[in-house]
Amino acid sequence: MPGGHERGAGEDEGPALDWSLTRRLLGRARAQWADLGLAGVLLLLISLAEQAKPFLVGALVDYAMATRGGLEGSIVGLYAACVGGVFVLQSLETIQTQRLGLDQTLGLRRDLFRKIHAQSLRYFDKNPVGSLMTRVIYDVETLNDFFTAGVTAVFQDLFTVGIIAAFLLLGDWRLGAVSLAMVPLLLWSTAIFRREARANFRQVRRNNAALNSFLTENLGGMATVQVYNREARNAAKFDTVNRASLDLQLRQVRINAFFMPLVELLGALSVGMVLWYGGLRHFGNGLSLGVVVSSVMYAQRLYEPLRDLTDKFGIFQSAMASAERVFALLDRREDLEDPAQPLSAAGLRGDIEFRDVGFSYEPGRPALKGVSFRLRAGERVAVVGPTGSGKSSLVNVLLRFYPYQEGMVLLDGLPLESYARAEFRRRFALVPQDPFLFSGSLLENLRLSDASVPEERVRWACGQVGAEAFISRLPGGYHAELAEGGSNLSTGQKQLLSFARALVFDPVVLILDEATASVDTATEAEIQEALAVLLKGRSSLTIAHRLSTVRDADRILVLRDGRVAEQGSHAELMGVGGLYKSLIELQFKEQD
Image: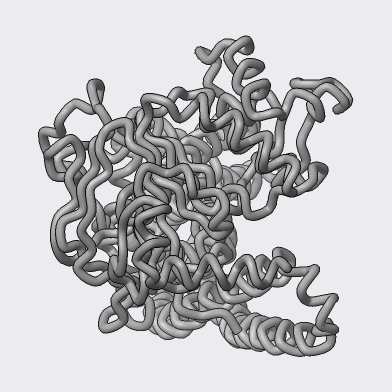
């Protein structure tokens, strides 16, 4: 079962209703206080109009008793006005609250999406995709319910309870006290229900995140699953997580199954007590029948909003669990922070220097150890070494995907941390071993939806890397639609497009991370020919698996166990007879 996702603060303990989270959620709506206030006014008017009806019914009963069956037109008219007013006001209130909730959903998802983009890659190593999807999609949707079916409904229910209590006590305070006698018992049982429901909702959310993570991972690795016949094992693991979800849902059903009938029972007892005591008062000392009738109706109505409040606590419990997770991410301090006054990267020359850089993905397991080298502006440096020697770690540090722990990285002689990440990355282009393409048109992929990039430049870049030939054969050419991940293209074609995309933006520094590993020999020769022209005047760092591709580099770094073991030109390193020569001989021996 997937694990390792970052837990929100307070995920395992806390009060049944976290007022700090509630205030924070409401605080996000401060820009819409006018809309929220209007919704509150509408809810108050709805409650007044709705609860005036039993009072009017009582008045009609008393009038009919006094006149032996007569009707008072003004009372009937007021009753009709209440019915019509509730219809109109509820329509307006629904529109108002739904718009408020949807605006909050929009803002939360936008903020979460931006916050996720601001994290270093270390964060994604520890947090599964499924867990993040749960936060952005399901947790935010739950918070939408908090605004549309939670807060506003609770306000209305509280208004309703207050208005009903006022009508009961004004009609006859002693009969009203009898009607309210069961309320303390209901409040006590509600407190117990809230505590149990909150704990269960937390577990449901954690299980949903695990379920999403497992499903995302399984679908992403479907080819591996099928090749190694893991369908049955993965299905068994999925069943374990799915069964846990069922058990948690059933526990919530059991909690509700006990509590809801209890509310009904208390309501029925309250109505019975009003009928008994009201009947005695009516026949004993002349309490009007209209007051008794209206009190019975109010007693029946009193437990409707109280029962609804209980239902809404389910929404609140779920919202609190979701809010903990959402705000834990929004409040997360970034591993990498930009300086308060970043330097401009507009005139970068592409001079890069590593000074005794030490870097670890995990504490105690260094990936780079005291690495020092310099890539001068316009120079072509290649990096080679055995698997796990730290080649890709250089790229991760240079592009600030991960924070390094020791030493210093300089860009044009100044610390890398002096620049805003987004600013200096615009001067870099990375061509990875496994290129990623987005769903959409080929043209939009190559210019990354930047409409300011002319199509002519895109065509030029494709021509330089030899991608023009296969693009012309695609249905629609540059406007051909790519499937998710570019799955309707071959690996070599995706790699060519990745080259073209890098060149479209005219980088100062070009980084090739084993970029030709998936390209056939003929295509590789074509790319190398194009790169010989395109790399002129640019700094380039080439992580190479095929050592035949680095012979023309100005300098070659040879890494071993996270350290620079050798450096020099191809001829110099071959003359030394060290690790580089051994790697060359081994690779050519494997090719024979």
